Length: 92
Image: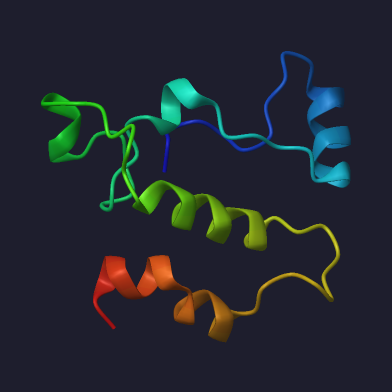
């Protein structure tokens, strides 16, 4: 959504460690431009930052649920499709 991979590091061996630990973040610079459309390349990008966009917390929540390291705790497809961000984004 922000144009940046969730697990990033200059050193590939550190990326694997971050994946296993579930260590990711949502950098403000990239996430200021995430909109309901789910991309920093959306129409809104060209006019103003979406710093107060109410969809950002929903998007972050959905991503966090998808990247949960424990498979028993990770969100399933039904919960994914029922998530509020998905309902607002796709109107169902």
